[in-house]
Image (cartoon, rainbow, N blue to C red; front, top):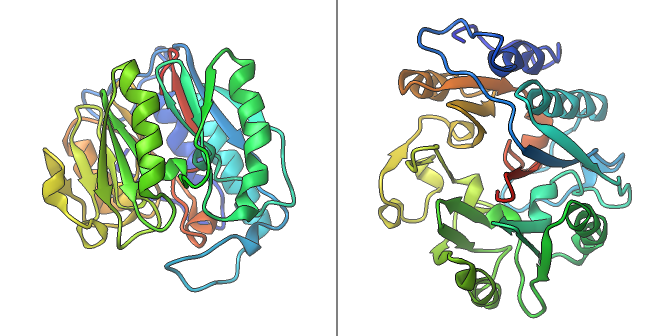
Length: 295
């Protein structure tokens, strides 16, 4: 997996990289590589809106967005999950909501419970109904964050039974309080952390399968709040999705970080998400991951 990412214009990065984790019968080209087993793993996704270019921005200046390229990138992202043995569940599209593709923001899943979020921006609240219907249809119990609580799923990072919740522009203290009341009886430990330099907590940090918190330090309000913290050299290199069995999904534009992860023994699947990055998105926010009745 040491090949350089392909040009964003080709749309080939995800297809080629996805072959790293296609299942137990296919090996990768890296020494000691691990393979993803087909398990009860599901990913909820939503197709981009034709109004994607109008999505909300907080920290970035608006740039021209290539919608046809974004659609190809989204398809490559979904294919990477399928190639790794995941079942994908597509939520009904909602074209009037430019940010609807960032489906992770609609809920927080812990064990067999889905807590439906309450986004800060009213324009995002219509996204909730179809997302709730999708998660309820596969057997999850449903709770909700209620006003004046404001929460988006991108502010929630789960590491074992510890649930870190970012307190920033999209999630407030009341939502943290409500989430604690809902999840702690299920065995979670909810820990609030500040988010001051990024849109969401998972815009700054994510976690490796062994529990190590990786982050892009210039965007992390206080790295000392996380045990086993490791800084990454690229912003998008701090964004990973655990595909299982030592395989990580990450953005194609983080080659230095990818090599670090490979040096730690992980197989790295690289996908091009450049158009979603223009809207402060990353590889985590384009899906809700469900693993054996728990995310």
